[in-house]
Amino acid sequence: MPISPTPLALLPVRRLTTQDLLACADLSENRGWPREEHKWGLLLAAGTGHGIDDPDGPGLAACTVVTSYGPGLAAIGMVLVAERHARQGLGRRLMEHVLAEAGDTPVTLHATPNGQPLYEQLGFTETSRADMVRGRFTFTVPAPDVPVRPATAEDLPAILRLDHEVFGLDRTHIVARIPAFADHLRVAEEDGEITGFAAAWPNMDTHVIGPLIARDPGTAQALIASLASATDRPLRTDIDVRHSSLLGWVKENGLDTIASNAVMIRSLPDLPGDWRRRFAPLTVAAG
Ligand SMILES: CC(C)(COP(=O)(O)OP(=O)(O)OC[C@H]1O[C@@H](n2cnc3c(N)ncnc32)[C@H](O)[C@@H]1OP(=O)(O)O)[C@@H](O)C(=O)NCCC(=O)NCCS
Image 1 (cartoon, helix red, strand yellow):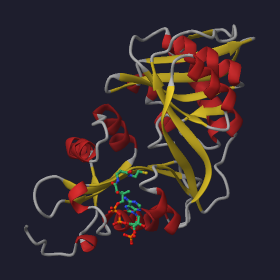
Image 2 (cartoon, protein in one colour):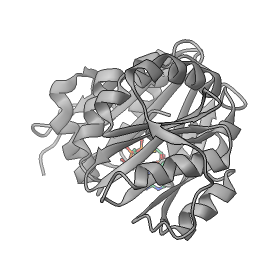
Image 3 (cartoon, protein in one colour):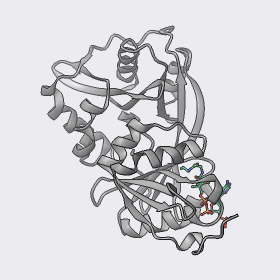
Image 4 (spheres, protein in one colour):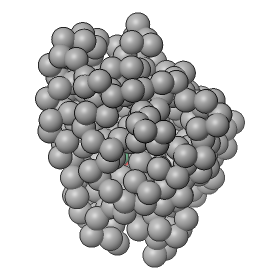
């Protein structure tokens, strides 16, 4: 077995670029995750990737992406350490590096059971949980009759306003990318007011629904049903477990829980914004 000249946890961390997309996807695959190249493309372009080059060859030994929402919040996602280098301090090294860069900025992430012990040691606390659900949408239990239509370019200012109000911070740099990143973007509109919006973006063989922002669970249901009717692929989404009625409804319509992640935060008691109208993130990797 080759001996690394430097102890693994002392290796330098470098900024990643979109040139590193395939190496990041290789790392996902190495840990049994899907390659998700489309998602990696968005994260590396809209966020800041950090990685540690594999001392034993080409590719990355570890990586993560930080999406910044200004001084109010940053989201960490895709924390990955190659299987062959696991449990040697690389995950901790990378996390300490990005937390030092974040400084006083509160940081959030969705933790897998694998990652949660490390994040707890680094000062994160669990504020909620999100269920990852997946399956073919069956239309067994109809959504309420809330008007939903495809979004147009003219809707963007209203979508940005609603998103800011519900997310609690300006994320124009992310939301403005959604029309190009997603295959479908729908808005709910009542009495001339946009009361919700949701996107469906392609990820491997599924369409992921997110973000999903809506005035109430009925509006969220109408947005999901509208997106489901636009695709033949299975759906996937990550619903905050506090939205138990929406979770129950998607399960009656053929989706099953495939994973449960902890929503964690550091340096703040809870996430900003209004969780009651925030049903699903764009991706668990970016909030
Ligand atoms: C989670 C992950 C990033 C940790 O990276 P790592 O380099 O192996 O972790 P470290 O060696 O820095 O360990 C830091 C601490 O995390 C905890 N930890 C790491 N792997 C763990 C595991 N499999 N089970 C339980 N705790 C674990 C331990 O407390 C460990 O400290 P210790 O070794 O002193 O006991 C890595 O296992 C991984 O890539 N997993 C697959 C992808 C994933 O789930 N990522 C997290 C996304 S939120």
